[in-house]
Structure formats: structure tokens, C-alpha cells
Amino acid sequence: MTEPTLRVRDLDVELLSGGGWRKVVDDVSFDVHAGETLGIVGESGSGKTITSLAVLGLLPKRTSKVGSGSIQLAGKELVGLRRSELEDLRGNEMSMIFQEPMTSLNPAFTVGAQIAEGVRRHRGCSRADAHKRAVEMLDLVGIPGAASRAKSYPYEMSGGMRQRVMIALAIASDPRLLIADEPTTALDVTIQAQILELLKRMQRELGLALVFITHNMGVVADVCDRVVVMYAGQVVEHNTVEEIFAHPRQPYTSGLLRATPTIDRISGPLVSIPGRPPDDPAAMTGCRFEPRCPFAVEACAHETVALVTGPEGEQHRCIRADELHLAIRPNVGRP
Image (cartoon, rainbow, N blue to C red):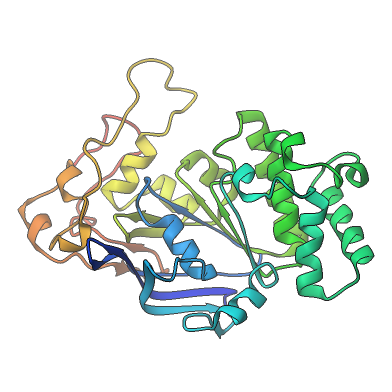
């Protein structure tokens, strides 16, 4: 297999809290290859977005830091790079689509001007050529009348069109790596489907390495090749989409799948995972999911739970994985 576009190894991220440093991402590792989509899933606060911000070097300097680990883009180490070096890479070699385009786009400039600014910064071309590239990108992402729409301001566009603009902005300089941080959360179902189809088409045509961050397992099934499941700052399972959905090895993964509404489940209460994530997971000695896990035994609370790697590269973090038969539908899981 070729070298990955993105390689993350043993990543720790710490935030300044209460006068001390608190670890919020703990020993995270994964690879993403060109033309591949890796999904990162988990509840709010699981460390998904913090991990992506660390990859792009967008963590606030005074209140957060990469404690240890390695982040490599096409073999180039990103941890420790100067700010100017990271700025040369962001928007050029790697880009990000943020969750809410209205807060990411500048309301004082037209969308064409914002795309063209990035093109001029990274390609060094003329203003006219940058504007031409901006129109091409708007057309590529399916915005009708791209030449006239390039003169529009963000507030003059719908939510779906603004998200298309964000995608155009992210891919305008032909990046190797694209990170999409819950890009469809604020959109209705019809527009969400259009944006997902657009992202899949962009990846096929451009050969991007795509990291898709979400809490929606239905979206994962639609767009991803492999899945990293995060809980309380740790990777708890990593496998192909097919195996994750058919044979989850970690109770948290099973809980996420069982909580996903399906078309054949039309009556009865929605399934949920009881409890909430721990406030200070780094202080726990055992499994971080143990207080919420229906299959927990005494050892789960006290023994260190390592991330076990299988023969095909699959991973799970559960001391009972080999004895559990986890189900993805409600009320049918059994020890």
C-alpha cells in the first residue's frame, strides 16, 4: 500500500483548565490515504474536532498544545512547524470545511472575493486569474450562474449554497487532504443528501484524502470507507465501515448504532446511551465507558484497557470484546 496522505501517531492534546494542563485527546493514531474517506465519530466532547484542529495547526496557542505525538502530511512532520509554514500548507496542501458556513465566511466580502483571496495567496496568480478560478470552483460545486453568484455576499445565499461555497473555498488550491467537520449538521435532509453527494463526487474527481467528522452513523454508512470511533478523547474502535456496522467489538460503538433511527423502527421509544461522558477522563484508571456500559464487570473499572490491534489492522478497546456478541438493534445485545 502507498504511503498515507495523513499519518497521525500517538497524538496527545492538552487544554489549559483551572491553572493546569488537562489531556483531552489521548494516544490517537490513524492513517488516511489518497482517495479514501475516514470517518471519525463520537458524541460531542469525544475529541473529534480537537483532533482535526490539531492536524491543521489551528489550536489556540495560549490555551492548548500538542503534548506529544506525530502528525505527518505526505511525509512532512507538522508538529513543531512555525506559524508561517503552517499557513503555507493550510488552504493549499490541506483544507477544512467547517460546521457552520455563516460563521466561517466573512460577511463583508463577496464569496468570489473570498475564494480568490486564497487562490492568490497560494498560487501567486493575478487578480483576474484568481477571480476566474473562483468562478470555476463555484461552477464545479454546482452553484447555478456561478459568474453572477461570485458577486453575492454570504447573507444573500441559502444554507446549502453557503456550504457549497465553503467546499469551493476548501478545494480551490487542489489540497491533498480535506477535513469536513460535520458539514451537514445545520442543513435539512434534502440539502444534506446533495452536499454528501457533492463531497463524494469531489473526492472521486480530485483524489482527495477525506476525513469526515460526524455523530451521524447514517452519514458514515453513506460516505466512509473506514471508521474511527472516539470516546472521552480515546480511540475505542477502528475498522472498515462494513465490519463496524455488522460486527462492532466495543459496547460504545454498538450503542451508537442502536441509537440510530431506522426506517423499520417506526414505533416505540428511541434508544439512547444512558448517562454522560466523564468530566475528567484522564483521571480514570479503567475503561472510560465503564460507568455507562451495560456489559461492564469489576475489572473494567480498575484495569488499564489497551487498544488491541487485530490481524487486518482492526482495533478495539474492550477487555470483554472476545466474549461479547454485540447487536446493532435495540434489546438484542447479549453477553
